[in-house]
Image (cartoon, rainbow over all chains, first blue to last red; front, side, top):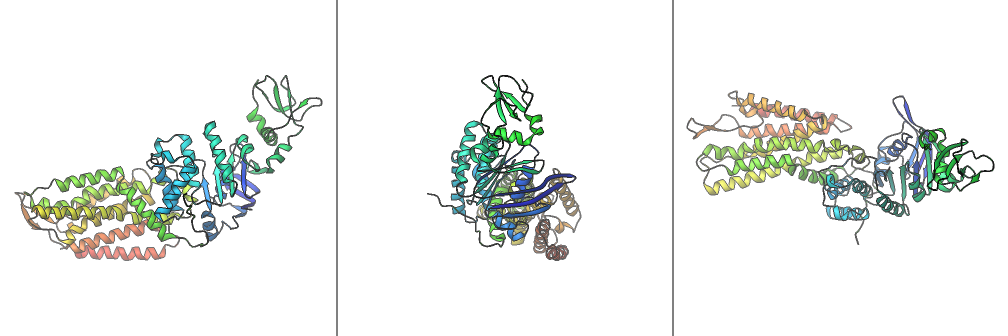
Length: 287
Length: 268
């Protein structure tokens, strides 16, 4: 396993942001799914060695990031894309990635520049490599953030909300890239978009209020909603969450009454059921 | 096909110096071509090319004191902006996950300060050679007169970086520069104290604008004094991030003593 986290606790003042998080991730793409404020970003910052946990055991790529040597060893094989990367707007795309490459200890100029060109090409940014970052669109900046995370072919790639702000075409392109990455390394990404998880992730970890509600495969998570999703012609008061479909019928999630027309659940259904009341507050669609 | 440059994974020793030198080269370039630095370089170049053969003091002053005013001041601000760039861009989180830690990045900015000094040195050499060919010099500046330009530019860049590392807040750099100007006004306005300013105009004008000799003091010790101040700024910058401060504090104390002694020796 590339990531072994057990009982991770992180507190900011009186707020316990992570409350004993336990999960593991190996080769492939693992999605952290949860609503805003669930603790996903804090957890990813810990996995990216940017933050240290207050308590709990963490092993990354076989190393203890709590020690200086372990942390350095992990960072040499880590790619990290924060939720808000913070670019140097006067830099060109090439200069920014090159800057990060130097910080990743690539001191030989020629091979470093080759590597910068490679990751910009992977992210589909070769054509704009000489453009200043301030002139790039939001989607291009997200891809630039991803490009810098791929420098040095890292064994562990941590991506925080990587698809935020991407249009559908960019999102498809991104999914293609991340799924390729996951073929031979560990990719952990956070999102509150179930479709990203459904499209990309072998493993899913549902986090809410700093706790892990579920950890397993996407299929297993979907399986928790079997027999708990149904459709009808009218809104059903028995449902936890309901919404009107494009067909005019209503889709319901919750404890299904007897005799209703059950349908196959989606990952979103399972996720909403897992969140329970919180989902009801956030996801109820008015009629 | 492009080869993948994978960072070394076996050693667990920080590769501090190679990274600091490589990053320092990059950062030197960023300082020198920063828009603020370019304004300073343009002004400095303007001063050098505006000298004619009718003013021996101007010809002496332009390559000796010109760099401090017209390059050093702007390099101070450019270096400060480069040193605070990651923080202003909110990029600290992204960079914190890189193997090169904050100390390495700070070390790199100290290395980068050599860039503006090198550019200044080249400009001074070119200007002096040109003036020599054109016969502008009535009195030729000596090595130590000329050295104060690049050394004070180095000091300006280092001071800008130190301020950026310790107080990366808007306006602080400006306040420090005002304090420097005040200090320089005090030293240049006090007879006999000129060599302990941040630069010294060694040539003296007479009332009719012709050469009136040198002000008293030692140009060599003045440069040593400036170099010690540069060292203090470098140490002050690194103190922000080193885990063990005692060795640097010791070096800083020695440099402070050196600056005081060299400043004393530079006085008439």
